[in-house]
Length: 331
Image (tube, rainbow, N blue to C red; front, side, top):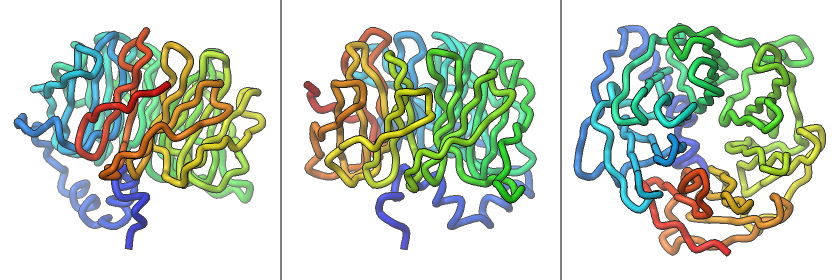
């Protein structure tokens, strides 16, 4: 039986592993994407990723749903021009207009109007592995990653994609660990949070990568580079780790929870908010040196993503297995 801690956020991996014939058949027959349905209950669909497009919040999730908010998360409406109904796992905007989202079956969609409408980009993969994360530095250079060590790169805004080779295992075999979260730091380095307590780091814009072992054995589902230069990553069983030397050394941070962490964000006032399964929300007010549990939802509904309410906003907007939810008051 699938562990409860993989029930929602982990389902992007588990669904593929449990039902590989379905995905294989889709790839063999040439899956025909159907546009996402616009429906009244879209605001209660599972959300897996969110990002800022200027002052707008763009969230993506199940059935190709894309939700938009122009009032710092107080209300959401559904985007009406999404060309796929497969699960969309992550989204990234290079500026207020240009954004990309990725998901199951290797789908990549692109928006040039702040998430209002989307177009399908050419299939980047020869197979149908799901993509779990995406990040764009600008409107040309971007990366997407996902199952079994799949990492792809574009230098032309997604018109074409090339597969990137990551460092092999010590015995020379391909490193096939799943890749969950791409994030940059302020120095121009790029990091990818991955399975088995590891990250990949590039210091040259993605031309080459090296493996970083944090010493923790659990998968890392989220990561963020802070204003002070520290790195914070989090994942299974409530583990949060911090590095203050660009990823060379890592310290396990107190969290007070065993609930897996699914999302991290830094607010404009320097506080860090983490959300996780079992409805848990945590906060740190000292650059990630210590987290405490702010709240746990009475219904224990799994929280799946979190984003700042705006570029200069000190409030977090939280998402769940049932869409956007009211964020607890953080202090």
